[in-house]
Image 1 (cartoon, protein in one colour):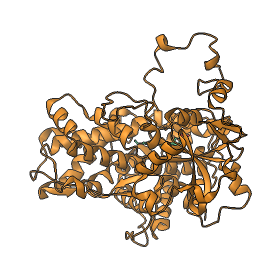
Image 2 (cartoon, helix red, strand yellow):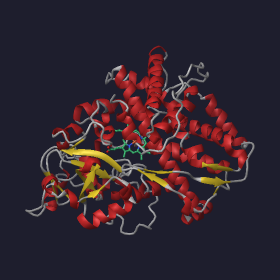
Image 3 (cartoon, rainbow, N blue to C red):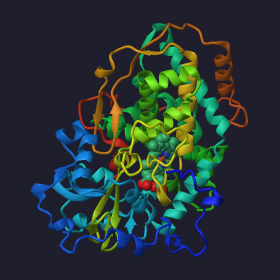
Image 4 (tube, helix red, strand yellow):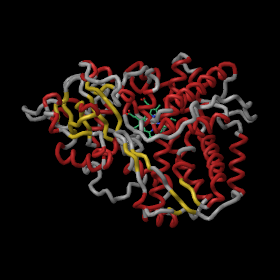
Length: 507
Ligand code: HEM
């Protein structure tokens, strides 16, 4: 979450304010919070609640209408609700905006280390549980706290911060032009499968420092991983093999790219740590940015406010992105945090080792912060969609830049873009952590050739001048291992990036 007030000295708390003690990243005093939250003396803990009375966060009913479920839970329990995860294991779902921030910003109370979970310690989580890919601990920055988190995350953050922003725009412009060139002559396309699912991975492979030829196969592998099908293991192997070749190559041929910056970072990551964190970045960047692009395009094409504002010049694409980040966060939930000791949150008694799920989608529509959901939120970035605190998304500027520049360029190339089906026919697949627009069929005037300005920008991107993330001379063509067997989408649950991040590692 980006607070609009963070850098405003006029809004800084008075010196010595007890609610802003140093050392509490939440900016709230623990005793004050507990006093406000204090539960009734007979308030039961999670393990004392009858399972039969709790709602499931998984299964067809929950996945048909997650937003409706969150509102029922809010009405019943308030800021923090007990829910059941796969296997009917109980956990807390944090629904309130403030409570979510408290959990994210207070790692001393709410750890990222899943090994603390009581259910793990009591042997209640089956090896083949669908939860395992998401929460089984791995030596990655996403599961680390304290000094180890700072070491790993510092390298990732410094590496990402070294990315040249103009270079990102150039890659986005170039790949958008190439993608439009492929379907532009037809006058009709599905923008999810022909655009949104390609652009982020194509750009990210360039920022990471991979040879250009790797892009298309990595896009296919990432699409397969997102679907979590039988071939996902082979696709993950393909991603890992491509990253391994890149790390080996960068040892003798460093460049202005993320891979080289991670390898040369003072945190002295091992080659395996470099590889795994590049994989974290690729997967974390891909699915979230795919969802952000798809949902923003959908909103631009269907919401009268955007159509009117965009054509009148009052609303910009960044405004549209902000609105989507509030209303349809690319990740609905983050799993999770684990209580380091007995504590209190939103009036609930949390026991040491309890699991908490961050309800980003629910927190973004908390009536306390948004009493009127129809009120536009242009420029307001205090949503929860990028998280907050020590694990706040380090790639948010890059993700936003890819989405913003890509949509901008697409609307320039296809200015009469319109939905080809009634809005009521659009569908989403939901899993417990995220929702994904299935298709976005559009029509437009067929375009055989790109306008000169875009073609010029595209070729400038292709040349990749020295400010970009790759050398001006095109890299040598390398052999790319095929993804075996060829990814063939099968019906099955979507895994989500947290799942793919850890799931295929644990073999
Ligand atoms: C634009 C869409 C994106 C959204 C909505 C998003 C959202 C998030 C969220 C909610 C988290 C978890 C925060 C937490 O646990 O408190 C996260 C973590 C992370 N994201 Fe993003 N992200 C996006 C794009 C990206 C991009 C483009 C990159 C890389 C270039 C990236 C890299 C990461 C990494 C490495 C983490 C783990 C950080 C840590 O645990 O310390 N994300 N992101």
